[in-house]
Image (cartoon, rainbow, N blue to C red; front, side, top):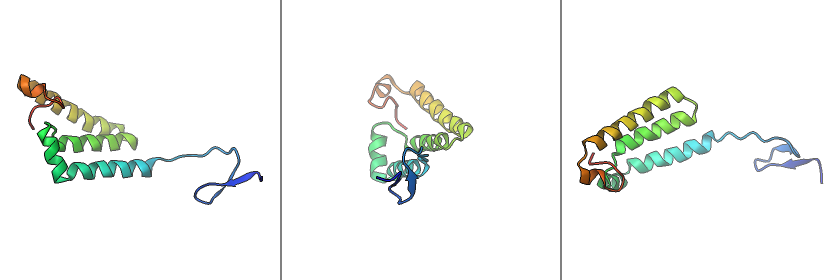
Length: 107
């Protein structure tokens, strides 16, 4: 056995060398898939039926994307807006609607 080994990309790495991982691409793909799902009409209708506002969900995804990319100010703004809107909707919801699964009244 040599002191070098091939990684999956075919690059030579010294055995025991520290591997630097950058999850940016994988996270972008997953977040992109979630965003696409939330924009699908059939899924959107199902979520609306559960009291979920898909526009707020998409804003939460934007906030998560910003946070994971290191833009904490944008993340705080987006996620803060989402939290305020959900709290406001809960405060204005009837007791029956507030108790539904999902915890949010109608959009």
